[in-house]
Amino acid sequence: MPTLQAAGFIEVTTYDATPYETADGSTISHAVVVEEFTGGLVGTGHAHYELAQIADGSMHFAGIERFSGALDHREGSFLFRNAGMLKDGVLTSEWLILPGSGTGALSGLTGRGACSPSGYYLEYSFD
Image (cartoon, rainbow, N blue to C red; front, side, top):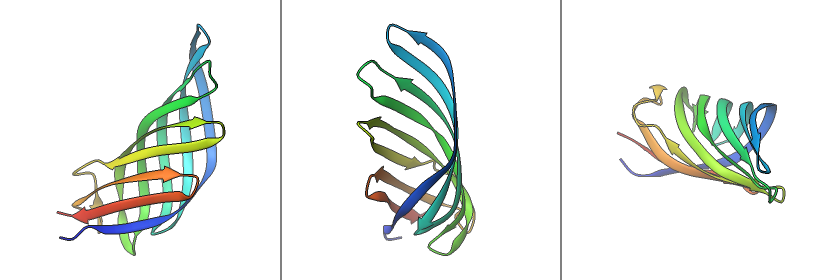
């Protein structure tokens, strides 16, 4: 099947971070995040992240997010790995859809994406 594309925007509606280790100018935290997606993805994301705030002010993160909603009008859910950083107020990240995680009309979904200040971008296909 051909590679398809989706793009849009994300609004963080809930952000709850709990620090659990601080040493040598760095703090490691766990965060629970809820996001609303618009554009090619329309729905809600629920994520758990591990965060590392380091002395230069940057924050690095990695985690798993469950998206529930529609991708180009196909209803279902999927999991994706999201890793990136926030530095000087600018967030960048890379996504990888976890193979086999799609449900409903999103069953068989595979793909990669990214997020930047200009929004998110996803390249995907179905097995």
